[in-house]
Length: 473
Ligand SMILES: NC(=O)c1ccc[n+]([C@@H]2O[C@H](COP(=O)([O-])OP(=O)(O)OC[C@H]3O[C@@H](n4cnc5c(N)ncnc54)[C@H](O)[C@@H]3O)[C@@H](O)[C@H]2O)c1
Ligand SMILES: O=P(O)(O)OC[C@@H](O)[C@@H](O)[C@H](O)[C@H](O)CO
Image (cartoon, rainbow, N blue to C red; front, side):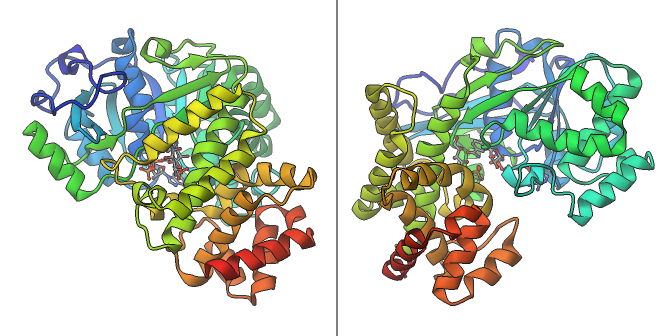
C-alpha cells in the first residue's frame, strides 16, 4: 500500500489550495495489505470515509479491506481492474486535491457468495463494516427484523437448508457469514455499521439475532458470545459522483478513473464498542473512540441530517436542485434556523459548541464545489424522517410547543409527494404513494402514522401539517 500513498492533503489542509500534481497510476507496484477487514455496501461513502480512514491510519498497511457491492456488479468489476485503487477528490470552493486510496485490496460483486463466506470464515478477518442505507437492514416498526417480507422468509429458508450462498438481504448475508465463521471456529468479530441510524450497533445486532435465532438457538448464542456490534456516528458529505466529476478528476490527475469519488474536506468518525480481534489505529487518522456516542449521533442526525431532509423537500418545492442553492434561499435558510433552534434544545453540548457546529454546517452546505442533489437526500423519507425529525418533534409537542421547524419539514415531505418536489424513491414507495394520493387530511394522517403512529392521533399537529402543506403547495 505504501506504493500508492500520496502527499497528505484534504482534511486539515489550509484552503483554498490548487489541484495537486498527478497521482501515480492505478495499478499496484507492491503487494497489498492482507485482508483483515470486510465491508458490505461498496458505495461512494465507504470509499470517502471508512476506506480513507484506514488509508490514513498509521498501521493502515496492515489492514487490507475486501469490499462487496450491495447489489450491482459493475463497480466491483471496475475497481478490481484497478487493483482496488481509486481516486478520492477532496473539493473546496478554491480547488480540488487528489489521493489514490490503497486500503481497498479486493472488490467483489454482491453475488460472490463464496468469497463472502470464505472471508468471514477466516480468523485473520476481524472487522466487518457496512454501509447499506437505513432501509437495507429491513427493520420493522418495532425496530426488529421485518419477518413478514418475502425476501426475509426466502433467506430464512435458505439458511435453514444450508444454502448459505442463496441469501439476498443484508441481514441474510450477515447471518450467512456468521454461520460460516461459527462453523470454522474463526473467533471473534466486530460488526461496525456506518449508516445514519441512531444506535446503529444495537439496531443491527437486533436484526441479526432476530434472524439467527430462527436458524438455530446455538448460532444465536455463538453470536452473542463472539460478535461485538459497534455503534458509530459517521460524517462526510459525499454525493453520488457524476460523469462531470469523473471528467474533472481525469483532467486534474491525467488518469481516467471511472471509480473516482468526490467528497468534502470535513470528516468525522465517532465509535463506541469493543473490537475483540483488534482494529486499525483509526484514531491516528482522526477517529474518536468514546463510551458515549449517543450525544454525537443526536447532534449529527438532528442538525446535519435533519436539515438535509428539510432542505431536500422544502428546497425542491422552491425549485432548487442542490443543497448549496437551497441553503442560499433566505426563506429556506430561515426555516433551517428555526429547525435548528428546536433540535438544539435537546443536545448535550455547551451552547457555544452548538453555535460553532451550526456555523460550520452552513459553510459545509454552502460549499458550491460539492454538487449534492436534493433528490439523492430526499430518497427514503419514510426511513429517514423518523430518526432525523420525529424525536425532536415528539419532545417539542410533549413540552406544549408547536415546533414550526419540524412541522414544516414533515409538511414539505408531504407536499413534495403530492405536488412533485423530489421524485419519489422510497423503500416503502407503494404505501407512501398511495397515501399521498388521498384527500389532504387523510393523506397527512396516514403519512404521519407511517412515520410514527402517535403523531397521527395528535389532532393539533395534523391540522398544523395540513395548513403547512396548503401553504407550500
Ligand atoms: N454519502 C454520504 O454523504 C453519507 C454520509 C454518511 C453516511 N452515509 C451512509 O452511507 C449509506 C450509503 O451511502 P452512499 O453514498 O455510499 O450510497 P451509494 O448509493 O453510493 O452506496 C450504497 C451501497 O449500499 C448498497 N445498498 C443500497 N441499498 C441496499 C439494500 N437495500 N440492500 C443492500 N445493499 C444496499 C448499494 O448497492 C451500494 O453498494 C447511506 O445510506 C448512509 O446511511 C452516507
Ligand atoms: O446518505 P443518506 O441517504 O442517509 O442521507 C443523505 C445525506 O443526508 C447524508 O448522506 C449526509 O450527506 C451525510 O450523512 C453527511 O455525513
